[in-house]
Length: 163
Image 1 (cartoon, helix red, strand yellow):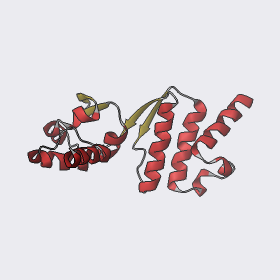
Image 2 (cartoon, rainbow, N blue to C red):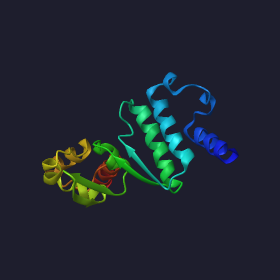
Image 3 (cartoon, rainbow, N blue to C red):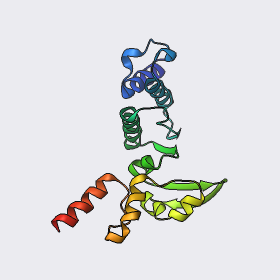
Image 4 (cartoon, rainbow, N blue to C red):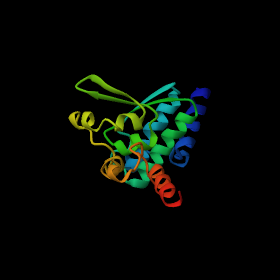
């Protein structure tokens, strides 16, 4: 029981809920309940964590905090499998993307590689991230088609302005 208690305490500290340890999860807000779910998985300490739509129901700041937690898990050595329809998350956080449609693997690559396949994404009912759609429309202005995050767009604009 000692090791299990230590893992639970460490998991609650990791997600920032150690002060709420004695509260019933139903008394917590949506974001805090999602953190409880993450903590419960962490207490088990699996090498691979599968997360389905991790930011559903969260406001922007809650979604950012959740993704930062997931990013920290990855940095600590966990393999993260994230299932999402939110391509903004994919563009900003994923290293590898698997595009599935009707149970078949259609694409396997980096976000930049996958987002280049706009026609296949559209046929699969996946909408590319808004920034990727904007950049595609800016193609006539010699804007690189490999831009999929705001940071990449900012760098491209800066390079265009400053040479």
